[in-house]
Image (cartoon, rainbow, N blue to C red; front, side, top):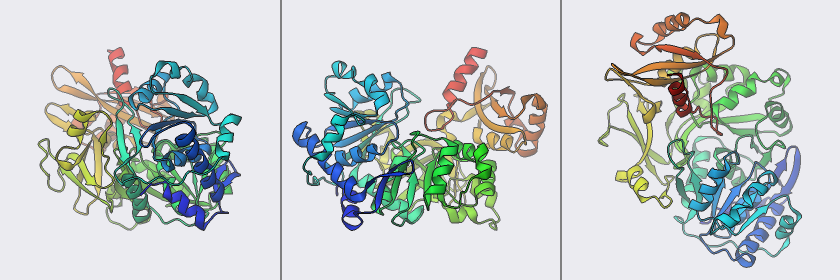
Length: 510
């Protein structure tokens, strides 16, 4: 099944319902959305000569036209390569070359940067700027019939963030995308025609993936005029669109409720905030629930298993009578409906409940492999399981708690120390706003624990105060040996703290 059939089917049933919005303005009904993407698909195959399976990149700031281009690519039997618009030109070049993309859709601010790459890259033939009149004319021609594809045909090349080495292209099939969409309905929330998803996070990542369930159920894809996350603008859109949903990184939730505009905002239209891209600390989710109410669900997934490994449903988050609520809020939930999840030791043997090891997953949502990288595919998918590189453990009730990425675990004196446990403890100190814990090389112990701390007023905190606080909550040997007070923590485009950059700062300090 071609995943583009989601749009074709919805357009037949709900042709006049709003489908795309730019800010508060509706830019396309479902009939128009389907008609324009079908015409653009015809141009891609018939006029530009692209063949089934060819790759087409989308290097676009959030924009309603992203959806028309994306579904045109799929309708034409081509492969979408969505790329975060905030990357460096060298990263654009690498992804376009590695994917052998023949065509690239771009928003105006990126088109001029990308045009010179046509002369550099042998496969790239055109860069189409979506704001140019010539592009708009491409959506006026005859419709291309929906192209037939097999379930395991490639639909999406998702490039990892590349925090270590070059980014790898996770090969996501039509089956993978359909299973991820169905899993949304099974585990996250139900949707009705007219519900809205507001894309304040990048459409080329998790927010875009969570746009597919809205297409399936005739919802509205709302793109902020800013093209990104502005708390005041986001709050205005919530007030305008009933039953608004979001995909947010945890840091975005914090910024939303900390915004000066939040105090006077009307959030009654808010249906659900799905947060992911990293676990939310218990102190932060409690603060968010107090501010907004229990309108949250958490997902844990990776690009290699799109948004679908475990989940913490809104019903579990709002249950304040559970005797282990603190542990549940600090977890990433339970195994999703469509997957199997286990904890393996270093020899790929299953570990019993309560033991910490690598999280592995298998199911129809797991990627086909890495594009043009058989060695990485064999290593990551060995034994038929996706090896996530994340460390965690299950409890007796089936809740998974993330400890850290395996590479972030600190080994001091032969003992494994998981930074998140220390971060959780420090975040309960009243003046601490953000914290990231890493290991620093030590001649005797191998590594020692250090913490980078963002706080409201560093002058009011003494390291001994944080030491005393840690000793009250965690074992003495886990407390940081040094605290670095910083204005902010370095983060990537998805809101994840860049511990690699913090390690580089330590090298400079030493």
